[in-house]
Length: 237
Image 1 (cartoon, rainbow, N blue to C red):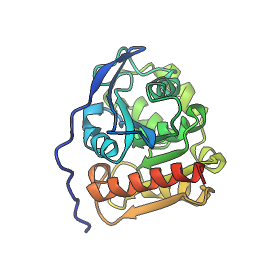
Image 2: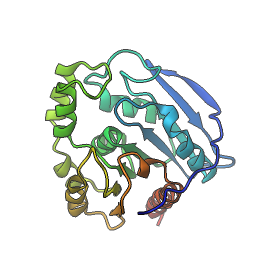
Image 3: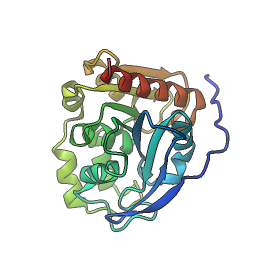
Image 4: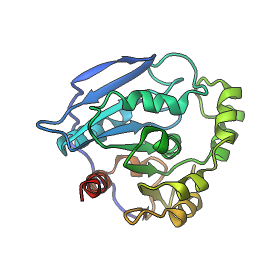
């Protein structure tokens, strides 16, 4: 089994605040930023769970913002039909002249893929992305544990075919998944990886592990950041 490597203690954000009822934390690198990253957490999680990646991304020269999705953390109201627009709202906190990447875990991985076109993202990192059918099942069974406008979010999820969305993406996508994931079947990521068309796109499968281990592995953080910066570099080639 692959052993999880650990990050050093993360640096705190330089700013926390609210934008349209969404609680966020933001980092800026020393010197000119190479690009920006929006980080999306999973169901029943919160922005603080991803501070270590945000800090690492800032130290790698990227501007970073991570936020609580509605129904989570310090953000206002239940999750509703604005979920993808919320990603774009938070992306607007990054400097306007920078290319951006979306990096999401589980439900956040789904959001990152689904919001890529809307935000004009140049790269996507999706960690064990949960498909809309799996998310719908969890919401209807009330096992995901966060407040939600079920009618509005059901309509949103039913409108998205994640495989078709990945196949249509013209940007690089990195998919990370642990073989031991007990919540999201790895077959879902294999299907997504098979249809990704950008030359830089790839699927990394980690031996063993579980649903959370890939999200917090320092070596995979480094690989994700290398992938993002390579995708940004392609824009200037």
